[in-house]
Image 1: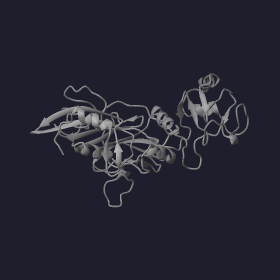
Image 2 (image 1 turned 180 degrees about the horizontal axis):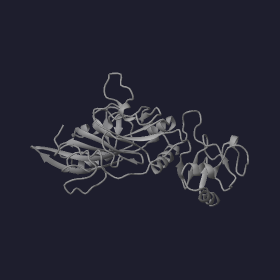
Image 3 (image 1 turned 180 degrees about the vertical axis):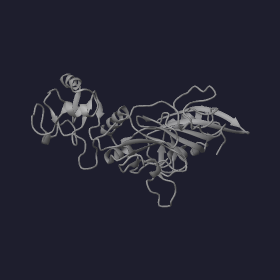
Image 4 (image 1 turned 60 degrees about the vertical axis):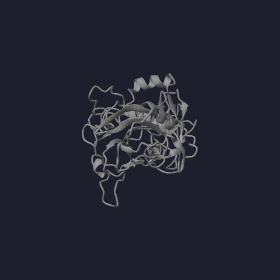
Length: 331
């Protein structure tokens, strides 16, 4: 591991007058940052392709809980949304009249609408709302040296130490290998975990890699144009060179890569293929979530805005990504 002048920053800001770009807050501009950047949005999920419920498409509120104007079973829409912290009942009633709320994809305008909070999918102005309060969504800034498992069979440091604050049994969404740090989502929402981890849904991830050698503009162009690996072609959705520096006669570069691939150790393999092996790697972003100022080794619950954004993403239709294997990523 490199010293402070060459290694990744674990603080929450940039030093030495760096321009403070997301994901590139480093000490002396040398290593990937694991604790800086800006907060982004996150989305919530109430159901998904697993668990026997699936996504509702174009249907009204659950038939067991009434329909627009029904006085049957279920909870009034404005009450459920007020309990979820969206707004006051009076404000939500105005939203309903204005046609800003959808239930299972259908706009509702009747104040008597009743829903089943455990089944129906609600969004306000296109952003999903979490009604199932039993679901927990946590962001972890995983340190290196920790395997992405809740219980490692080999006795290595695992993720259990980061979940003691929450009584629910949480699971990690996807994996980061022991040598990679950064953003990892922990949740007890199995449907959402399936959507986010499955490569066919094409959720984007942003990585900052410190690599050996001086990366050129031509190399960046090659990464976005595409290269051939042993398991097939791959290209970065975006790539940019953040910095090139030298220390002790050795040159290194910081590269930001945006990918939606779920293939195993894809960033390391891509950079090795273009002649710049990865020395340090951090995942800064997962879908709409940004690592922000969360310190290394710390975890926090997602904010309401982040949950809404994450659920909205997970409820969207997802065409299968051509050529992607049905496997969880490890980076």
